[in-house]
Length: 168
Image (cartoon, rainbow, N blue to C red):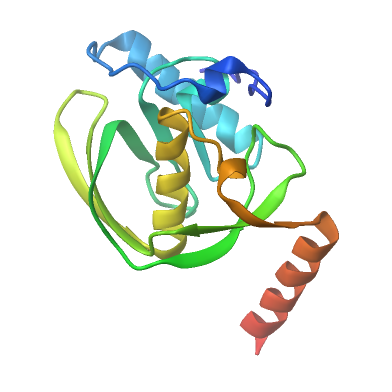
């Protein structure tokens, strides 16, 4: 496994729809392993292949310690419900945060690293992270969906308030 360089905006690979994965081989497994290690090193919760310069429909979401990461190859949105607005950031846009509206509950169909298909239902923050990474695979950047930009100071204050509420 290796840590890869994260592609920063502006870069054409971030705005180009990715190719469908057809080869489920060691090269794909290495890409997934490298992406996961890169995401962890960058303190992210998700990463898509174009963010490491590879134009393939591959993404990972991993935000719960102790659980296996969600590897999504050729993901498709099968069901979506509701709308929720929350703050997002992106490894390819360091220091930029904003309020983005996304579906609150989703169901996806995707492939594992061996090519087998699976379905996954998610809601809330997990659904948001999955949809953010799936957008990357279509060349859609979260900045095109921001309704209101949030400064680092505002984000820090919101996190502090949330931590206080969690203690109570």
